[in-house]
Image (cartoon, rainbow, N blue to C red; front, side, top):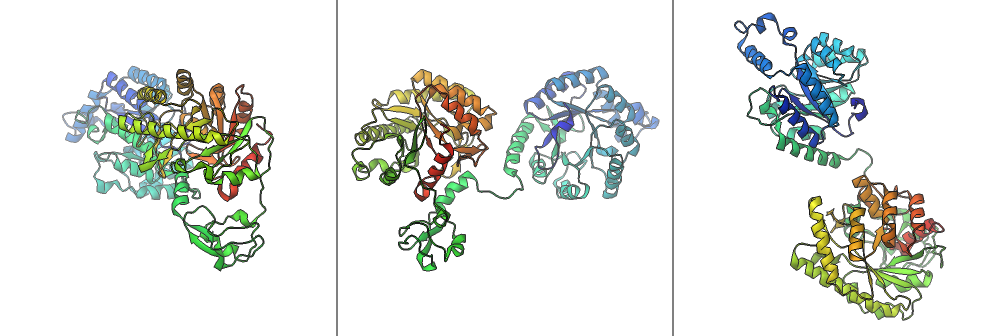
Length: 630
């Protein structure tokens, strides 16, 4: 493993060095144990220290009777805690076997020679040697990358050493640090990181000797791309570095917080609206509404417009831009305006060419209007819990030629999120009751759709948690609870289709953690056990594959025999779902080929987020993109 392979620079993943240093206290087994802990915490590098005492210290200093008291103390500890060359060789091999970079700080030239025999990939130079131009020149001859701490030195001394390194075209990084153990808060001076980044144009990191982890995490927020912290098994052990080290529990906490911090730092690219914000924007922000009926071809005046919630239409920032422009259709009073109201309209086709059974998602109140302009094979009712209490005959004609299915609500009265695998018995029973009502209402809908013998019901089954993922071991328990819930339902005359899920679902405009129906092996096991098929949401599976590092094409192939219905939309990242086809990063060419080759009789809808707005415009765009490809 080469340190160059890590592409260490500001804005990239932080390179973490667990500084074992002398904290093994001369024990080879303790050194190995510290490497084990570091590997388990997924640090990038473990670092030791090496000294040749005869070369490093003067004759007087080594003379115990005449040396300075503090120097005597240090030399006594160094002699006591030394590891031999054979042990260093074994530790180097052991670290590499754990996929860790093995580094060591040489304090003298003979130690450099020894480390060259170990073929270390880079050198760390201690703060104490920042002004040691002779040692630095010697290390430069190895042509290996250098990481150099800046403690104990003033501005001028740092500048001289940086000039020396740059003159030799060295690959190097600087670590801001204060060389006291532990460092008082007033001396940490994290703002100096800004100056180092701006002044020297090389990777800048932080070597922390502070109490706790807050200052080190703050250094990352300031731009440090390398972090070095001492690690110890026991802070109370003999030796100068233990008190300023992190013990195993603290280091684990630091690593968890560091990775969370990296995610939250994001980038300095242009700001984009997150998926959760989009949901809240729809509900809370404002858009331009019509105050009166506006006929096709009418030029817009300010008196025709109002600003109201929800924010489903055109942003109020566009109000001046549309004054004087002609509308391309009739707009009813009290309806939101869209940019497409002033552009060429993409009209739906009555019929589309698909080998698969195709359809669109509909709401109860707009189904009649949509079925006048399009003739799908199937429609998927997206029901709210209020819709279930409506008189269906007010919205539906008696003889619809298409098939239908129902997407069960996730949210019911009193903010009850459907969770059929909750370990709260009362909560789970209420979820079962609510889903049974959906099943009963679906059977009631059959009289309006003569073609539908056993309509499908898509169910988001639950299995979410609020603040973190469940453990892998606990998931089987929740699948078993879900099986119990399905057995307690009377769903004769329907097909229940659990839907695969994304890792971070949005509930109430906020993110939660999903635990079930993401792993394809778990999904297949559940389907076999309960003799069920699933609804495969392509957008959801893509985000799950991104998060869990799975191949999306293979995932789709694996699930294909168990799929009865598809939701098709684009996506990006781990939570950018429901995008228009082509606006995300899904490989649709290969995904659609997998779906086409399936032997099951399947159906699909384009499930574009807010695709129903502006008379279904998002669905017509998606169907145009998908036509003749399924």
